[in-house]
Amino acid sequence: DVKVTQSSRYLVKRTGEKVFLECVQDMDHENMFWYRQDPGLGLRLIYFSYDVKMKEKGDIPEGYSVSREKKERFSLILESASTNQTSMYLCASSYLRGVSAYTFGSGTRLTVV
Amino acid sequence: AQSVTQLGSHVSVSEGALVLLRCNYSSSVPPYLFWYVQYPNQGLQLLLKYTTGATLVKGINGFEAEFKKSETSFHLTKPSAHMSDAAEYFCAVSDLGNQGGKLIFGQGTELSVKP
Image 1: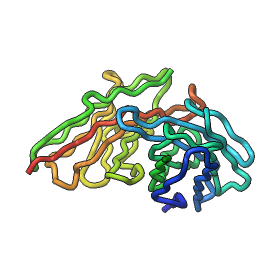
Image 2: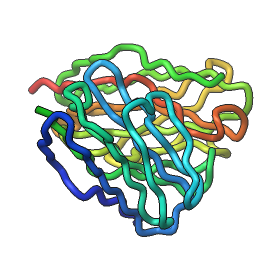
Image 3: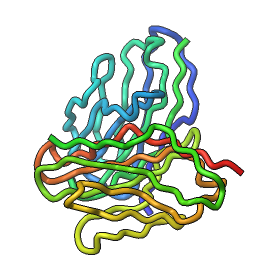
């Protein structure tokens, strides 16, 4: 089975810090995604990538950037963390665009204080 | 554009009762449909998916869903609820047309199971 690993389950960071959330998948998937999940707002797409060194903005990219230097790794970067970025962050990957199911990581619950 | 509507943000059933979680979608081309489950503080896990072929799809944990094109629905059912089914459930749609093939998720339905 495909495994998507997020480096941290829980993180506490201070306002203004630069935060890196790491995601690694082990099945050579082309497509990777970052979502944030907040109560009552469902899943919101932040950024996605269909290939190495390629990135596209999702629905809520402001305050975030991403990096995909290797196929298996997709990093989400909070340039200057703010309290409104406290959330659950979910990484996902998929094989065929538009056809394949996504495989999700276990999530990182980030608290910015 | 594609969209997904899950009717009811919260559903409560008694243990042993039928579970019915509703999902309606809109798509201009034949859709691919998915149901996911999320337990507290975890990621989403695929329950089942419809791509082509048989419209009644069986998934894990005794769940199944039926694709009804005429009703643009993909409702999730389980004949007898267990306490362990308490979780949040997400319906999702994708196709090879709009949205670049990304999955579009519904807002989720939280299922509570009463003893």
